[in-house]
Every structure is written in structure tokens, then in C-alpha cells.
Image (cartoon, rainbow, N blue to C red; front, side, top):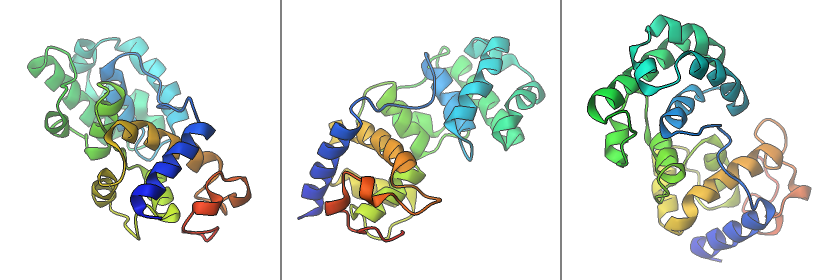
Length: 213
């Protein structure tokens, strides 16, 4: 089985297993996803979803958050960890959205990368979930599972994993595929315990065949 064939089969099976998989960060506006993605670094999505409720209650718009004191933002987001740097990036992002984009999130990958604290993973998430564009989000679940399954071979660097996946994942499938990897990585192909291979819908095609990786 070629990597392209393996990718298509993995996509098919995960689609059956997790038909409704989507982003686990709560948001109803694009700028809120941008904020949540920054807060999610080294923090669970569940905690982020709780913390942002207080943040948006206090600062309900891009303009309000752009004008907020960084120290006040930090006080609210501190439970997510790395409060100072995250608050600084969020403040900087909102100022740029307000001043350069009329309060809107730019629908351009390179423009997103220029925003404070936004890397390729975050930019891809925005492009896929907000704008419906082809996207591959190489978070820790994606990197771990793609190596275990055999879609990539011993590649740990996020950008290199992303570039390798672009070659074998149909563009229209990329965003949902990565969301399904998150669900599968949390429930079955876990990181901190031995993966539950006996419960895995990919067991017979997985390159690791139950070996930790």
C-alpha cells in the first residue's frame, strides 16, 4: 500500500469513526478562534473554553480587547499558562486587526503568519475552520499519529510533517482529517499511556502495529 493509498483508507475509516469531528475550541466569531488558539498552547482546549468566557464578558469585541491593558488580559488568561506572553500576543493581534483589517481576521495565510503569536498550525486552523480553505493542522496529535500510522516516517518537525501530508492528503480532506486525528489521539491512540490498539479502527493498517512511538 502506497502512502497515498494508506492516507485515503485512514481518512475513510476515521470519517466513519468520527463523522461529526470538528474544532474543540468554542467560538462564534473568527477573532475569538484566533484568541483561543493562542491560549491553547500548552493548555487543554477545555480549560481555554472556560477561561475565554470571562475574557469575552469583559472585552466582547475586537476593539475592546485591543484597548485593554495587557496586565488585565494577563490576569484573566493566567490559568492557561504563559499568561504574560499570551496576553501580549493577544493584545498585539487585536490592535493589528483593529488598525489594519477593520476588526476582521484576514483571509490570507501569509497575513495570518504576520500576526503576533500566530504560527503555521494556528494559521492553518483559521484557514480551514473559518474560511473553509484547504488546511493541515500539525498539532501534537497529528504528528504523533501520522508517525505511528506510517503516513510520515520519523518526522517530528511540524512544518515538515505538514509538507509531507500535503503530498498525500486531498486538500478538501485536510482540515477535517486533522480534527479527527485529535479525537482519535485523545480517545484511542493516546500519548501518555500505551495506545489502545485493540479498540483502534486502524489497527490492521497501522505501521506501528501497537509499538509506542
